[in-house]
Length: 424
Image (cartoon, rainbow, N blue to C red; front, side, top):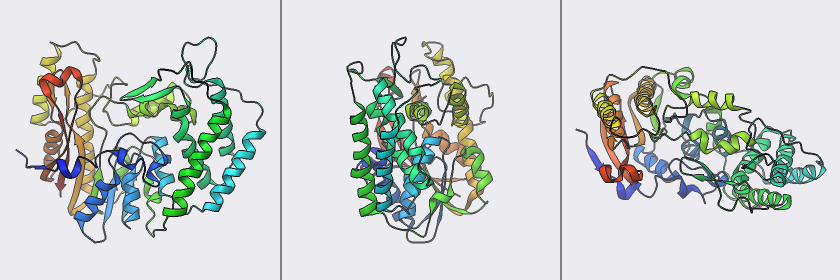
């Protein structure tokens, strides 16, 4: 039905954030999801040298907005996760001065040494070590060291540098904790009970992060751009925010990769940082944040009964209903999640269409998924929904073949990740 173009050789190596882990500024925080800066550069090259305005509905750590800023291209972006919003803000700031970074680091070093008492209190039961717990995220000495750094950073009376050092602290938290990122969630390291990091070791990791990455990148790679995409970054749900913040018929290009339909709660992936740095204070805050995210996970039982009147989606949901009766459901909300994911996709496509200029293009990176041995062809369902909103589907570019879960492997094989190219 749709024209598929083989971009496996072109995109296969650049559709992962891993390539950014050694890149200046991008490496400041170990982001998990998203594509590399080369993907953005390839699109800029395709668009040619002309003045354009871009939109990124799912900013993540700010890769799109940063690379466009470096190319002198204006970009409006949206990110609902407060941690990712902070990371993107910090990477988009281009007024840092090396001398100031060094001065504030010296301030932090002096300040943390003056803190004698740390009271480790939290509404999150497993965050800190205590005798009545079987598991905890931080050993006591590590937790106190982290809190000393946190208090010192919060005492910086310059917002730009306070935010910069907060991201530096965020970047080492997983390393000094008892946890690691394990696919969809956080798990305990095998040797976590034997880990005995000292306060000095925590401080050294932080200091090295600042000196070996932040200072070097600012000194060698920071360049001023007349375009400041930090001012166009919004900490708001894009399903609502785009309509509020962006004028109709004003956007030339959309580059985005929404959360995939993989039942992953991206809030969970960064839960340690969200809790430690005070972005969430309790479970109610977590629930509120989850309610603002795209409905690609089952951490909340969704009550919304709406659906999209789309033939391909209806056939898929019907196949899933039948298959689910023959397979043990690990979560009863899976089919609701799939249905509502495409409700959200329709909202995004409808909203973006109003904002695009005639002839404007969309690069929409997403992946197929599978449940109950039924393929959910996310690429074609999204393309079909976009068509119904008025877009012309130019092509679907094959980007990568992703592994499916062991349960789905025999029936489904690999899952295609692709880039849908749309035009108004």
